[in-house]
Length: 283
Picture 1 (spheres, one colour):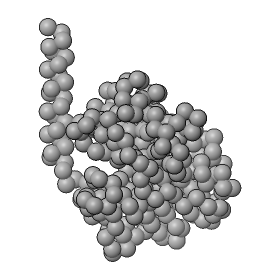
Picture 2 (cartoon, one colour):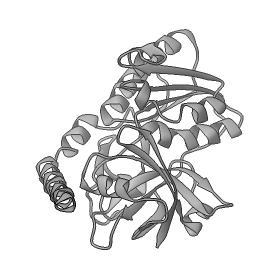
Picture 3 (cartoon, rainbow, N blue to C red):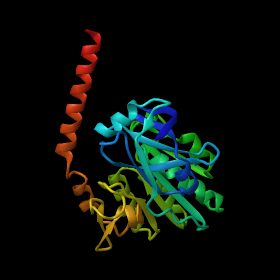
């Protein structure tokens, strides 16, 4: 069993948990992920490893409560145990000395971007970070990103922190003025699509970390298939990182909606059952 040793709320409905996972902590590299089940018969969900700690034999994961399983995970407390976690899965990021690199992060993707940028900085790259969210409350890992960045830019939709606007606004300005050797984009699928569309015109290699539907994480179920460069790839074993200029984002965005009705129903039934428990406890 995997014990939660730290839990924090980073933003509304965004939680961080540090979990005891000795074997995973020893092997995990930037860009990799785990698949977990909150309880034995629960849904399997993939979550990126935001950090590892060899001394405490733990890994840190950050997630947003959007469906039944993430809401269940968010209810756990320090000392509680997660049924099972498998990993590290996927291919690690290509961490080399490229020169001047940019990391673009949005929402909870900022936490997933952090270990990549940290690794790139340790390799001697000049790191420019552009992170954004809906408002100041949703810009997570800002201090951590700032520590490993040579330059950092923050954007918010409402202008409550940093610059008002989108991360791509800042990215375009930088690309027009400077030579950039490589870009990583991690965040909502639509954000990664827009970043990739933008950077293609500037001929800057752009890596995206995809988050499709995933079940087994070993390439057997086919649920996480994506089209990259006109060929079928499985995100769990061929990714999760791909050349953003080759990804069929329109297909991916459509596939992400495949089980929308089922997910909505599962969440509604879960919330109704939780409401009944609260009502019962008050009577």
